[in-house]
Each structure stands twice: as C-alpha cells, then as structure tokens.
Image (tube, rainbow, N blue to C red; front, side, top):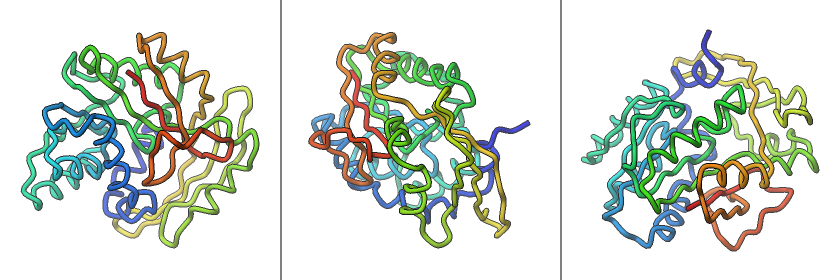
Length: 252
C-alpha cells in the first residue's frame, strides 16, 4: 500500500508549482549561496527536490547540483523545466532512506519537508538523516528545514494552515496533535493535475530543537545551529520562536 506522500505526488507536479510556498525559492537560494561562500566548485545534493525549484535556481547561478526525489512524475517535470532552460542537472529517482552516494557532496539541502519528517516512523526519518550524512564529504554542510515542535505546543495547527491557504492550493485539516509522538494527524485535500479532487489521511512528525541536535550529534556533526525558517527569507538573524511553523537547521 502506498504511503500518502507517494500517492499525493503521483500526479501533482503542475499544481504543486502553484502552491504558495514555492514562491520563496529565490530568497532561499540567496541564503544557500551565502552559506557556501558563493563557491561554485562545490557539489550540491538536493534531497526531495520535487519539480526541481531549488536545484534549477542554483544551476542557473552556476552551481553543480544533483536532485533526487521519490516521485517519478515530479522528476519528469523537473527535467522538462531544466531542459527548457538549457540546464544540465542530474535528476534521479531515489528513496532518501537508501541513497547510493558516499562522500560525494559538499552540501546537502533538504527543504520544505523534502522527505524528512514525512516518514511514518521516527526510525525512517533517522534513516534519511543517516543517508544524507553518508552522502556528504568530510567537513560538508547540511541545510534543511523541518516542522517546529514548539509551534503546536503554543498554537493551533489550524492557525498556520488557515493563514497560508490560497485558492486552489491543497488544504490541511488537523484531526489531532499527539503529544506522545509529536505527530499531527490530518486530512489533506488537493486537486491533481487532471482536475480530480482527492483526500488523503496523513501524519507528519514535528521535532523540538533538542531532538534535532541530539540526532545530528549522534551522526557526528560538531556544529549545529537552528533558526526560525521564514518563507523565502532564511536568515541567521531570526532566532527560533514558538510561532515559527518551521525551523531552519544548519549542521557541519
């Protein structure tokens, strides 16, 4: 049986590109460039690249990027976009829990819940962290965003979904946040690229900063920094707050 994150992205590439969060791409890539000192000799892996928005934007700026995703249809869209712009990007279908790369990249990015933390168990989420770490060269850097577990302790998850919803985007209705597992169980409604309306039962794992720090320390990271993640405006000056829906993690 397919998991919700497999079913949703089977036929959603075009409508995915209309979601409000995709419009932060340029600003997020500005931040990534700053983090790597504008060094275009570095090799970058984009995990959960989707339709290739970050990979393509970075490639247009002269970076060598590889994009991986679990969805063949999303990757087809990414390849089509890259080809149209005359870009050579290696897009490959891989499960982030089982990557073939070892000591291959200087930077791994995993943005907008590009796999982690969507998996159905904590162990599977940890496998993603282990695999992206394995893919990094010694001294490499990992930049990713994940759901901020402090948010649902102080706010209703409905607040963020209601405030960010736009006509035509997918909608999320929380059925309950489990304090024992830090998982939000929700109903996601969306319209696929053929105009069919679908409904999925989903659950996503929220993490508190201390959990992320501990997981990364156990994988050998020696410098771990966590900030609030603002759409299209990642910044080291934004201290993580309880009203940040996502956190930005930078680990070396």
